[in-house]
Length: 169
Image 1 (cartoon, rainbow, N blue to C red):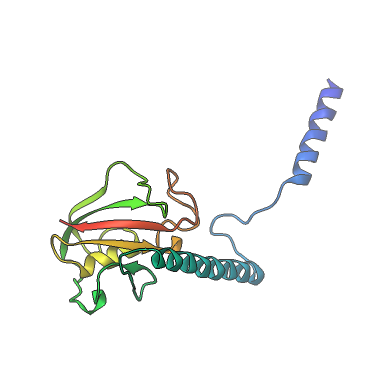
Image 2: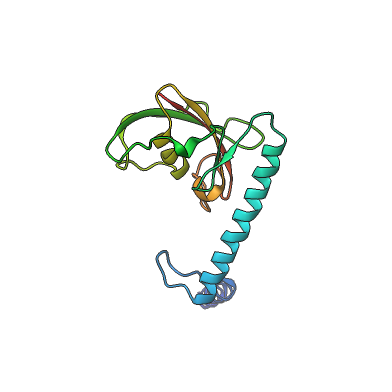
């Protein structure tokens, strides 16, 4: 019996010695931690922007950069009248990776939702505000505006930029 207890204590101590400590969710990060995170985000965003621009350069279709840091295939997009919070919209979109493989069989569909009152991908919510009924657009979205560092816990991994094909219903 004593041997089993000594063995268990030894196992617990050896496991604890190799365990990396992480701050709890919502925990306090040091200035160094915040700086490392900020630099990682900047370099990732720059890398993704360059990759997306390279992808655009090999397309027949033109894409235009937006102020929110994504691209859209609609010219003079941001000069249009912008819908306001509270306006009702219906739309659907499909998600693709940059190999143009569709990630989900069925589109995400929202019918008669109130702008500003629902949780949506930032690029989709922004584009919906400028597009008119029946219009379609393709968005090229860096990961920070898509599912970020966590992914969607299904088919989209962390730090994955997306192609979003959006249609206003």
